[in-house]
Length: 398
Image (cartoon, rainbow, N blue to C red; front, top):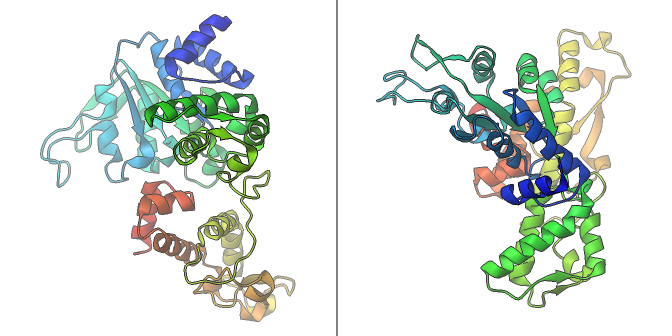
């Protein structure tokens, strides 16, 4: 593909950047578009995965057919099958009329399944059948229907980990992943960061009728060296904040630093100095870190629980010790690790101390308290999709 052809595609689909990894992704999308192979687009949240299904559709033989994008993580678990495959009248309580699903109305076109890793296992079975045979059943119907749909899927999950955890079918993963397009994170294309910032700044300054905004050399370097956990979406939000708030639009490094996360390390974890306990303290960061720690150790703790469930105290090796908070029913981030935890000897082990669910429930309750019950914001802080948070709220009766 020539540079002129590549530039034309970027202009058509609003893609900015000259990074070789990004260019290669575009070339793969154009090349695979001529086939009917399933494509899996992977990459972190906010990297711009949604552009590539549009490229694939536009350069395929299906370009005159329908194109639909479905966010699988935003559809409640109870209605996802109906949305994708349709239902017959009377299939469930509110099914007053028959309903065509996306696989039926997108026949002859392209269906983009965003956040495909959030699909329930039952729906994954149905999706696998459609991909393999082109056949599906509406809910409440025994009539087999045919569809000719090109499926492009995207996810920001570690699919290998999801398979190991039993949350995603391995056979479906291989069926979707005939061709993989991995979209690079913003920190992998540092040379594109000033271009993206400049484009966003121009757009927002024009929108809000503000004077032009520019960065000096030191500010540009600081922008490129930042980690950008939220990728392009985070950069766009930052450009909008600066365009609206700053009166002086000649931005230096000192001004820019006020809008960047403090003390961000190479893993993207924001470290803050301990604060004294106050009534209005924000525990959102600690919740995020603790939740990640809990989930990472879930498998090991469950295995240990199973090992110890039938053992007598004398049969438990003396070397086994488990650390837990002094008050398992509450979470306190004000105490140091030395005071917040104590070793549990073998004779003190109780199965209730090994329940991961209790810690997860407390984290969800704390996140909901901090956000005033805003489930969308709470899900974002916990790293859940809204549907997953809704399911866990029902599961824990919160």
